[in-house]
Length: 312
Image 1 (cartoon, rainbow, N blue to C red):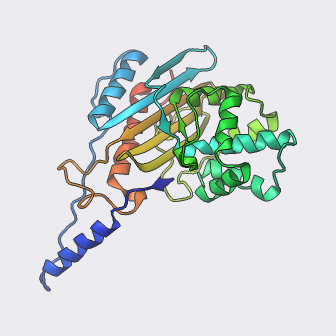
Image 2: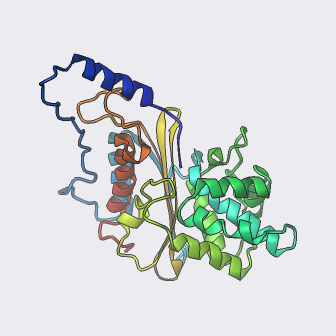
C-alpha cells in the first residue's frame, strides 16, 4: 500500500557519519537488529471462551502499542462479536473492494461501460493489491463518488470518502466491513451473481506478497491457516497520526461461513531497547521493523481468538 513517513535522509546521514569515524583497517561493526517479542507468547494460557480470549487479544495488543477494532460474524447462526467495531479508521487498500464493486454493479446495469482493459485490472487490484490498477479504476469510476454510492447501496453508516479525495484515506469501521462482506456473500448488495463470483474469486486468489512487495499473509491467512476457504483483502500504510495502519479482512470456512475484520493502529516499534526512526527503522517499507511488529500484532490477536487455527 503506502508509506508516508520517510527515514531515508536520516539513514543516509547516519551511515555517512559511521563511515567518517571508522578507521581504515577496522572491521565493520555488526548491525544490531531489534528482535520483536513474540505475540502471543508460546506459553500464554488461553481463556476458555471466545469473549475471554477477545479481551486477552485486546490487552495484549495494547501492551504492544496497538489499538484494535474487531468484528466477527457467523453467517449461519447470525452470531456477531465486536469490540471497537464502530471506531472509524482509514481503509488503506481495503477500499479496493468498493472500487471493484461499484464498477461491476454499474456496468451490469448499463450505467457504465467497463472496457476489457479496465476489467482486467480488477483481479490484480484485489488479489495483489495493485495500487496502480486501483488508481486507474478509481479515476475511471469517478473518484470519491465510488465510496458514497457503495456506502448508500450497502447501508454502511460510518463509511465515507476522505475530504482530500484520496482513495486510501477513505474511512470505515470493522462493523461496516463485516456488514459489507455479509451482503456481498448473501447477494444482498445488488451485485449480479457473476460479479459476486469475480470479487469472491479474486479475494480467494490472494498472492503471498502485494504488487509492491509487501507481505499480505498477516492476520487471517496465518492465524486461520486451518480453514479450507479463505478470501482476504488486506490494507496497510504508515503513518496516520504517527501510527501504522493494518487491516486484515475477509471470510473463511466452508460456504464462506465466517466474516472477520481486524483493524489496527500501532505506534511504530523501534526495538526492545528503545531508539528512534533515525536509528532503527528501515527505509524499505517491506523490511521496516515497525511494520513487522504491527503485522505480528494483527496475526497474534487472531491466534489468541482462534488458537487452533480454525474457527471453533
